[in-house]
Amino acid sequence: MANMDYGDDEWRRKGATLSDKTARSEYGLTQDEIIAAINEGKLVYRSNSIYGNLWPRLLRREVEDLVRALHGERYLREHQAKTELKRVNRELKQLSESARGTRAKAGHAPFRPCRAVVGGLLCA
Image 1 (spheres, rainbow, N blue to C red):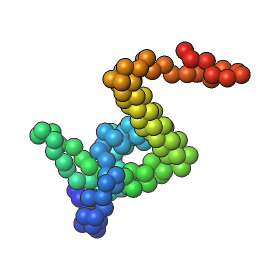
Image 2: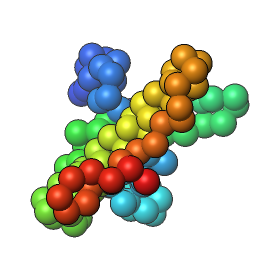
Image 3: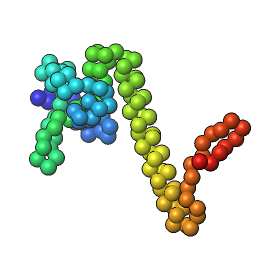
């Protein structure tokens, strides 16, 4: 169960906690690894509930320490880079869709992304 050594500040700080599902997707952990770490006391968790469904909320710092111990520093950095790339690509897609909508409302021609070609730009 939750250890009282940790202050509430860390649990309340934005981005300092994550769900077990997010830990699995962002860091490549398995559910078995997470449960084993909780049972061994390597991960502290607090129970959360959404629409009656319980899920463990974990401290990101501890999850990163666990990944580092299980798989190494390089593995951790690679997964963090992949997660950041997914976030940036998602943001770019949203901005592109927003630009298309703005151009259509203003009566401009549809937005056509350009691709690089040797010697200049060629619109697709």
